[in-house]
Length: 287
Image 1 (cartoon, rainbow, N blue to C red):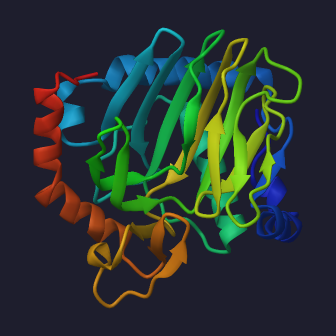
Image 2 (cartoon, rainbow, N blue to C red; image 1 turned 45 degrees about the horizontal axis):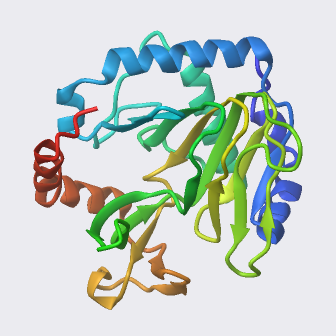
């Protein structure tokens, strides 16, 4: 069995101080190979089980990114019943343990228990040799964005997970760049922690930006981030801010910890998601 996050909570003050100082925490060799193999199998089973049009329609499952050198899947899960869309975890013991580990680590680092109804996005990615690089970004539920003429987009409103947790399932890369590269927006400093099988990386998703360079050899990872517990509201400008909430500046816009993330997401599903989903259908984006 893999180590429990409860073993790490006794070290929470030191890890919390590191998170505050460096913007990330690196935990080497947390999970055993047998667990990693089981989690890989269950993730593949979830893709086969839940990638259905009806799950995309209700926004429990997100569009796959499927290219010749990288395959990425994502869906929402929770330990208990949630007021927002999720997929069930029956029979997925390794996924359940991974989620429990994430929630315990998140709670230890943020100083509060994560409620069972709080959803997290589970995503897993397979990088092949010579994979196309993933451009620098922050993770989030992009609620309102506009496409630019250059093919990119500008985010106007979103929900940003406070922390992101990444587990390396397997990795044949070595050397200086093995996977995720973090950039501290306060200092401009870049760092790329090791990404060996069983390693865990947790980083501040508001302070740090991350990217993945071209990888010469295969790598597989799984990640979790909470869209409900301590998620922050992002607004490009004051026009996208929520009334009554206090915001602070970040490089790309404004963020607030005072906005009810669940209520914002419920409103998005009622008012915006039907049009977004219809646009996906028009563009032929199903899976």
